[in-house]
Every structure is written in C-alpha cells, then in structure tokens.
Length: 302
Image 1 (tube, rainbow, N blue to C red):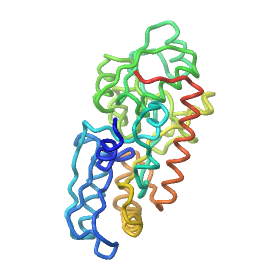
Image 2 (image 1 turned 45 degrees about the horizontal axis):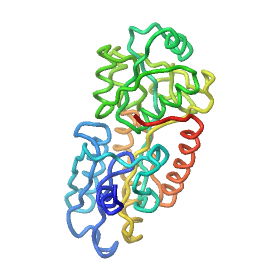
Image 3 (image 1 turned 60 degrees about the vertical axis):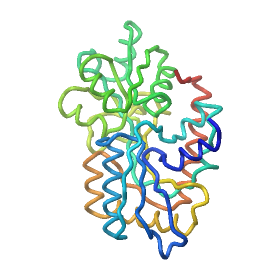
C-alpha cells in the first residue's frame, strides 16, 4: 500500500474503534461544522454502540451533528499489525495523532459446550487428541494473535477460521461449526449468559466483576497472558494540538459521567479516559509488547 493511500485510509479509521476527523482553525471555534466519526465496524457491534453513545453526547454538548460513518470494509489500525505486517505501509506513531483511549475489555476464551473441557488444561489435553478449529474476528486482530500465542505456549495446533467480525465468529462457535474463540467480554457475554458458550479463562491480571467465578490465565499457569482490546480516538497527523486536547477532555468527561460509565460497565467495558500523551504512551508500549510477543512466538498471519 502506498503511503499516500495509507494516510487517506487511516484518516478515517480508528485504533480499535474509530477516529474523529478534527476540523476547524482553533479550539475556540471547534467544532464549527458537523463532525465525521468513522467506525471501522458494522452497525450493532460493540465498537459502533459506544461510538454512537459518545457521538450523541458530543452533539448535546457542542450543538453540532456527529455523523457516525460505518466502514466495516476498512480495517481498524491495530498495534498488532505493526508486528504482523512488516511492510504495512503506514506507522501508527507517524501517521496518526492519539486523542484519547476511553474504554477497554480483557479477552476471554470460550468454547462450544459440547467440548469436554472445564478449564484451559482440559482444553489443551483435548486439543492434543483432536483436530481443533478456532474462530477469530479477522486476520491480524487481537482474537487471532491471542490464539496464535496460546498455541505456542500450550504446544498445540489449531486451524484458524477468520470471520468478518467477532459476532459472526461467536455465532458459529455457538452453533458448533468451530470449537472455540477468544474475544472481548461485550462480544461473548450474551452467548455465555444464554448457555451457548462456556468460558475457560480470562486474559487479565485479576478476575472480572461480571465473571467472578472465571479464573484468569495467570491462575492457570499462563503468567504472560494478559490481553485485551482498548477503544480510543485518533486524528490525522497535523490536527492542531488545542483541538486534540479539547476532544480528549470532553470525551473523558463523557465516559466518566455516571450514566455513560454505568452503561459501559453493563456491557463489560472498563472506563478509561485521559490525555493524548497517556494514549500515546499506551500505543508505544503496546507496539513494543506485541512486537516482542510476535517475534517470540513466531506467529504469522494467514
């Protein structure tokens, strides 16, 4: 991909969720026109839902329409991709300006209830005797890489079947077409509550409030398995710093408000918020962390 094309695509794609296209000459008069908020996921996905919540609140505060533009055919820009695709054609740090990270969710591993496993060790034992197939939300996304790293750590093999999003993949696991999937709590929780998926572990440092009986991977002897998905807003490089700061402050106020925070919590999301500088440090640390993980594991995209 040529860099000029990469810049054009990335100016409308988000790290994990979507990006706001900043417009206006100064923070004082921003926004002077409708804001276009591009979401790299289909309508109805958790990423789309939270983007619309934030967009509606920005509209109420600023009096300008926030137009959510779903681009499910445009891949979101992930820190993982920097390591999986050596010739990616763009740099997250060079071509995008961090605005704010506003929510996150750890990954959980789920299986079809027909598989005779109640924990990770039992799944590994089963996989060593049977052909295992796992679903992901797409090539190169966190649900893909997490399984590739798990395969390496557990010493097992499994066939990867990528889907166009976590929802379709979870549906096929629940139907028994594939065996398992790792993804975020908001994506998989409805299937777990309905008894269509069984949770084996959570990839977090501690147990989750919505799943207090589910052990972490650390508890199950996989000490390096702390993985999740964060949602944040980025803007094109060159967006004036006062506008970036204004966006970050307002979005942080919105997600930390009682009503939005409670809704995020019900969905299984952890509320964040903060400054552009904090988001930038997170991006850099994630690129370094996943770079080391990919190199150590030998994980490859299909």
